[in-house]
Image (cartoon, rainbow, N blue to C red):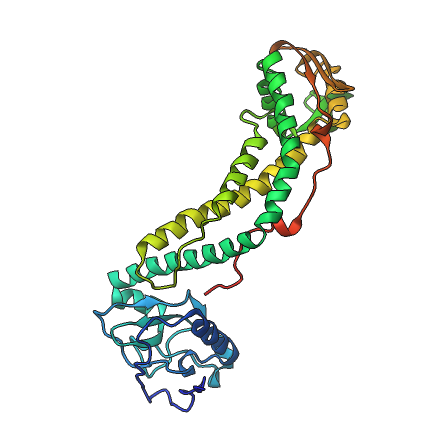
Length: 366
């Protein structure tokens, strides 16, 4: 078994070249190297790390992001020597691991110095590193989603009927009372959902102006139900469709690979998976919020507000009776009336599966 600290006996002035990497080091090597740096403060003493000056015209492949070396763990708390500009002198705290394929070597280089030394080659390496990091994350996220796909499909199937019922109620309001949802949403959105009125305190300030007191009647929760384009059922339907496409796995991929077709597919389909999971979580939250709007508390609050002459309403009836939702509104936006069917499942308790809904994340960060 190779010695993980094969460079440890070298002095700062003893430069060494180890052409030991005909291919890009794998993630296990990089993870071990980063652990060694964190434990010792010596990136240059890990096994087979080259400390000689690199060529200026060869390809460079970045293996890590910017790494802050714990220099307090180094003898004399000295800075790290930079193979590029000062191989035998103390130079920097923050650097990056890099592979030099033409030399078959790996070095820990100062990130600022490297940008100047390699120019466009470094910019290309940075872009490739970001792509590889993104692909690495998406591959791990895809595997995580695949492992809980059945649970997520089951959860969507349980919530879909409630989403459909909410959309059905909203469609009836739009059909029978066109313009009402837009009018009320605009007003509530300006208020942040807070319904308040001004009361005359009977007092005046030094300028003789009447002092008014703000009285908060309550918070109209879930008014997103009134927002134009409300359609949670569509998001869930699309998510379920995407989950069905996961029968086709992502193509094989490894960091530093030359299969651009595989990279593009991972960026596309993996990115869709991330967006899909985010949309599902947001939609379930939206459904729960919309249910609050149609609950007795919010509807009663709106009716109470409608009886106040400071509201935009001359009169407002907005309540449920059995399986009916009755709306009768007279306001500066006109007269609106709706008598909508209200399915029992509209306000059904939503199931929750925390494991299925966890964000798609990867614990490994280089």
